Amino acid sequence: MTAARLALSASPPRRAPLAPTATPAWLAGLHDVLLFAFLEYTYIGLTPFTITSVENRLEGSALVQAVGLSLCFLSLLIMWPRRAQLLLALRENWAMTLVFALSLASVTWSQFPDLTIRRAILLLCISSAAVGVAVSVDDLRAFHTKLFGFMTAVIALNLALVVVWPAQAISDIGVKGLYIQKNVTGIVAMVSVVIALTWTFGCARWTARVFGIFGALLAAFLLVLTDSKTSVGLLLVGLAVGAVFCAAQKLGPRFAMLTLVGVAAVLVAISGVLILFDFDFYGILVAFVSDPTFTGRDELWAFAFHSAMKREWLGYGYGAFWDVGIAADPLRKLEPGTWLGDSPVGLINQAHNGYLELWLHIGLIATLLAIWSVVAAIGRATRRAIETRDVPGARPVFAMIALVLFLHLLHNFTEATFFMRNNPYTNIVTLFIALTSWRPFPRPARPA
Image (cartoon, rainbow, N blue to C red; front, side):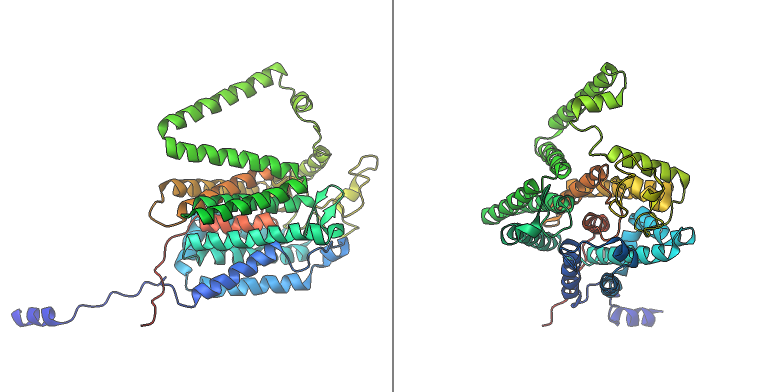
């Protein structure tokens, strides 16, 4: 027994096994390739300035499909060494994962299965690229810097087009830059302001802060030029929420209590208005909103809600309600005499409400899951923005995520960007939701 113990004590200690999620040396370079390819696809696109016809939207673009599959393949290469982080992201964001699964599964009950399978696969491919970027982030501050730099370049490109090619960049109702309409440009500019401001708060040097403020002002200038009232209003709300959050962090519990008192006062005022108008919501809109129809959206919302209730639980299939061909276009069933019934076929291809839109595609339950996925991600990002102190650049990143996701929920009351394929807001939101599950990983070992 004694000899055995001596032999064991003399034997060298066993090495600890390598962590299965250790970072390969090549991953950082591949991450940058995927990140910038994803951002280019999302915010510049493959065929900028092109307005596709109804027939082209029905047939789909072979170029878009090829690039989507390529991004997906590249993301799979990245996900394999980060499979532990991927499983964590899928588990913590189970609701979003289930929404994607239901989008693909809807081919079994879709009224146009061939369209659903193609469009759902495109959604999954681009979403896979977003998740691949998220799970391969090593340095949050470096990621934030790359994102800020790219978005500032996109904003500068849009402004340059206003000067160089005004006929293309300016429409009758506002600046649209690279995009097909001003509302898309407004979304890009709004998100860019949030990215720039949060990046600026993470700067340690004043020279970098000046550059960050310049980037934010550049994006804000483009936003004003778009005349996108929804995005301008939402940005003001987002900045107010961010200011309250920062003040509560710095001033402590007293300010937090004061904020709660202010919120209570606002709720009392809203209740007073409801009582004064005898809960006549249309009368309230007429009194406080210049256009109570929201530029005719009320009629479109009523049509979308009525259509959704016909297939309440499962919807019509992902991508199988709008852009389904001239003969099957849902608006053809309307009687003429209203602006919606008299609209040219293919002109209206969304419900201008993200919740109604997703309901039409994959049903009520899946829509509620999608809402929960964003709300839960906001909660995680907010908590980590408050609690994370030892990771450089983490707090500004999580504050950025929380604000962008919060604005996304508000934005979808008047626009349809909720888990919609090929949408700039959907793509960045998917990336940000997955990034709320971020955990630090060991750096790759440098050769001696």
